Image 1: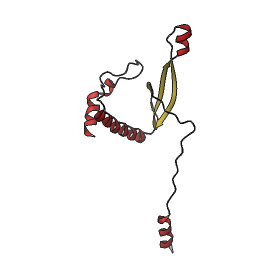
Image 2: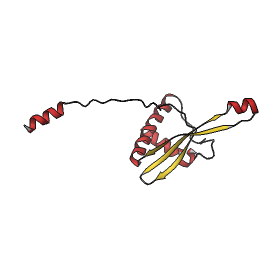
Image 3: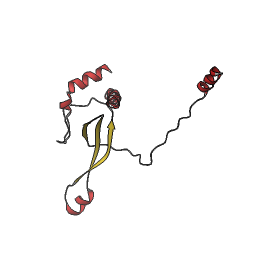
Image 4: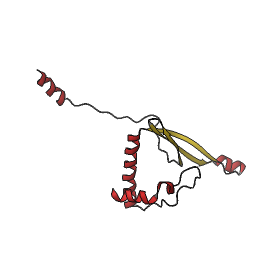
Length: 128
């Protein structure tokens, strides 16, 4: 009897469904902010835009920054995301153009890629 139940359980297929959150949207972050916490790595994605209203009516260039979302990743999730990003960065560079990691970030609050060692990034990309 146990073997019949086991066969029945293995032949049943689970139905998997996916849904898009009502809050789903696409963003292009300007900067990342975060660090480590006990048990996870935190990254806040920040966007920026120049206020058209301020420019039109007051002649001022005002940059507005918005914290869009914070990702809390376990170290394993962070490693998986890093591997995924490196894989697609390599594909991107193979198809379009090599990115210049030496330039770093224009935002002084954002760490430059120089701190991550561009040579090491290129070495990792070659291995993929």
